[in-house]
Length: 335
Image (cartoon, rainbow, N blue to C red; front, side):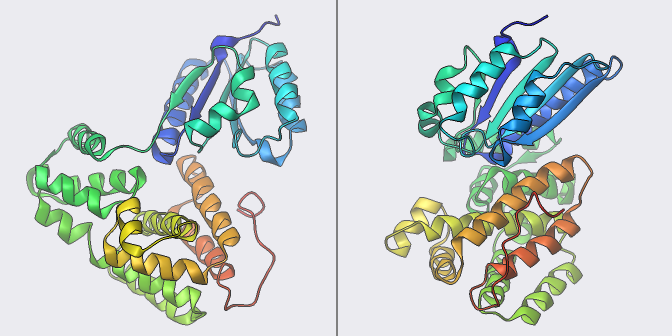
């Protein structure tokens, strides 16, 4: 049976990477639950790696499976203008046994300008823009309650100041709930476990990398591990700082203005602007893409945080202009 399955197409996009991935995980979990016994397959593809394999998967019948879920990543940033019509035509002809999820980290304005957004007919839209400060507070409260804990209002403000994105907030919430007395989070606990020192030490770690002091960077990373900092926490801190450096690399203005725009301490803002000047921004984008992609592999138990951190270190070293240049490694090429 061939038809235009408008109810089988979903679009997940927005700047909040955590909420985008969380929605994708929910969809995948429901798919697995529904089709586990009848046979179902989940295929993830990157649109910018080429349209031909995407079109082949859209047009193929699932001979021995009841349903196929096709996840197409970077559809907004990776899809060439001339390919939108080809893709939309393939969507109209795809079999009823195929479901499609489009995933990308793009702003709503950019999404609406995409030819594909106008070509799709009534897709399910899941848009996740950055949470406002008030929304972050409510989100933290609900997630703490879901984790079986409670939190003080001043602790919420402190947590927002210590984290730059929802990935970091999610990590802090679970760290603090299980480390707290009677599962109650106070400002003092946030200051002890989430804010301050670890961030400063990571600036020193990145300074060592971008100044070409490879051994110093390795020693600092070793010290963090010996101090009991989890690999998962290190990974999220790295992701947070890489995003901050990318933001700083595109910013033109005084550090106090950047501090407000990036919602970081003035000291962190000045350090980030200085570090951004030392980096190869294109190489840093590959590091960010790699860390983002690794989240998927870790969720699927294909990779783990410790390995991710080691591979991220290699990519960060290659992003330092003071070290010998090497061919950029794309996250899809080496696992």
